[in-house]
Amino acid sequence: MTDFAAFIMTPGNLVFGFVAVLAFFSLLTLGQSLTSGDQLDKRMKSVATRRDELRRLSRQTVKEGSSLRHTDTSPYRALVEKLNLKTLLEDPKVVDNLATAGFRGPKPVSTFYFFRFAMPFVLGAIAAFEMFVIDIGHYPVQIKLLITVGAFVIGYYAPNIYIKNLATKRRTSIMQAFPDSLDLLLISVEAGMSIETALQKVAAEMGPSSIELAEELSLLVAELSYLPERRMAYEGLSKRTNHPGIKAVCTAMVQAEKYGTPLGTALRVMAKENREMRLSAAEKKAAALPAQLTVPMIVFFLPVLFLVILGPVVLRITDMQKKDHAAPMIGDRPAAEQKK
Image 1 (spheres, helix red, strand yellow):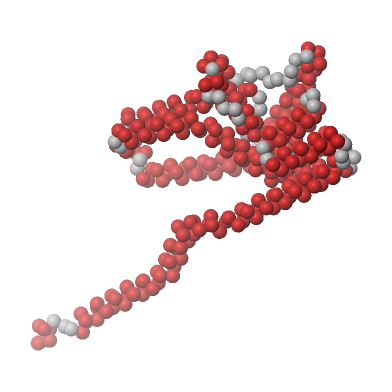
Image 2: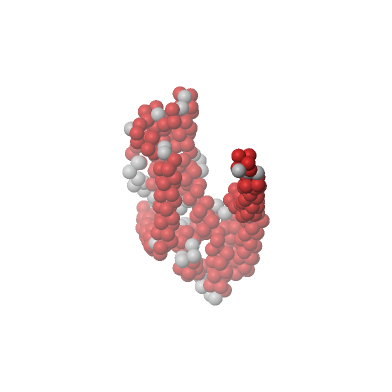
């Protein structure tokens, strides 16, 4: 085991492993871009399943007076309920965060609580094994304990970090295509389509640009058809996306249906505001680019620039010094050779 650890910690092997990891993620990125169509079909199938479930539960509500609720089919549900993890690791925002990341229903909640309970022990055990058994680095005991405790803390916050990263990527993908979808929705509504038909049409058109936005719009159509109040569907969309622009659009659509104001006017104003928000976000990124490029330029560009500029000068000075040292040896011969 010690030889294996020494093999892993060799600088050449570390560089090779780092290059292999980069190549793997590059291939993974290319594979995801090639399978985007399959992801769209999968998301649309899940939305269709949700629509059928809403239809079935809506009929049960009419017959039995029950409520529209999901059933938890997670394999971790029994352990979570037995250990009462939802109370022990209670997080009031976990449902909203999971919905923002694209996970809906009680099944992802049970999965989240299970991994939040298990990950600290898993990472802590791995760190303790590497520090105390393999003894990587031969650190003092205090440093080993600190690394083990740090791994335990990272394991506790790792599920939250993962969910936040997914939510950020999903929100970015939605907001990149949302202003265009509002323009299409405005054209469809002014052409005489109902809001459900227009949303379904926009979802089909925006699928290649943003799978997440197409999924959310299709889910909104399903909820508009089967939820008791249409306001609940719009509020659900604003909670799942958690973006000010979409929240403003949902509020405008709720008010338009409540007070009977023209929907086309509200959509035109909202589309203009969302285009301006996207433009301001792009300008903000462009303004921050010079500051972000400062460190890469100092680390990568300036050394090469100095080498190109000063390299010939250094070589010329070196040649001149060699000639100056060689000239006295040729002109000043030894005394024995001069007597001859």
